[in-house]
Length: 219
Image (cartoon, rainbow, N blue to C red; front, side, top):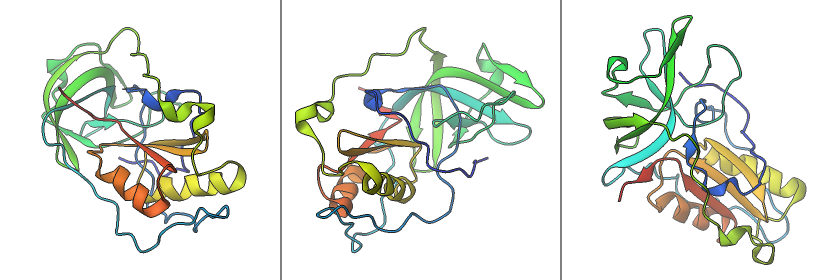
């Protein structure tokens, strides 16, 4: 269950390290990315290969909403919320999920959902559950990122060219969310072991795109 939607823009206010993803929406739809953007020196390297879809080498975790609609599979909702009741959205399937093993879920009109701390493994397509816990009462504070410092601006620039580059990167990386801040295009993907960031550096040049992983390695 994935929503076809325009790129989800998040206002850049230090949200770069947020791991509490308690809303629901699917990755970007199948429409192709926007045409190459350029602001002088910033031009896409069209010779780069397709972006990787890495699997986790071990356990990963996230705080997020799990949602199941009708007879469909339960899904991790790692993007933005479609404001409705019940919520609508989608994301990667959760293998091994059982509602009778958790507490705090809600149900309405054939949809069941709840927010939890989940742990498992990621094979590049499906999240394989190994444990659950309650969501924290308050989200964890985001660590300071030096790329947010005014004297450390990125190469993406600002204005229309940066917005067009954001839309291209968002579609290319099948991102969950994205925004432009301090000269960088910031995007969140389901999981990155560093290979997606290297692809972004090779494709869009270094100091241009910041790739963040929704699923975090344990330990």
